[in-house]
Length: 203
Image (cartoon, rainbow, N blue to C red):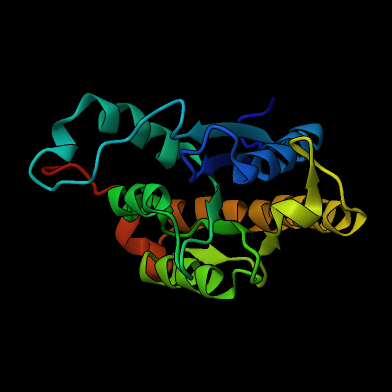
């Protein structure tokens, strides 16, 4: 796989052992891998993440191991159940851990919801905007009772939606990743200028 192959961090924001969110995030991850994308899955059921605490988080071993994975990603595929019209605590906790690592990158959202997950999608777009990230102009929402059977995607409507979703993640993720690299390496003004490596003092 080439050095500039698109890199996606797929986040399963559910702690449920039988999570419907996990089923769909993993389905998208497999579609992306089939298209040559490098996908890293972060599943908090398998990799617990302590609550964000500014006094302790940055010195923790878990944060130190997770941060390079976030830095490396070009795209964040964010999956969450709809809990009372909001994101899950597990996903919100992940988002609280990072902000510089999101800048100039793409958010793509998956919401398990019986009510279309519109408020959840909007909240994730707000996080993207506040962290200088981009987001796809749409998210994927689904209902586990209608769209899944035996822990697999079953409905034709969702299958087609996920094919489009994976395609758009790859196409627009590549566009943004290419431009992000150029902006970080360049000298032109732009919001990513603040993230360029600073020249060593004395040079």
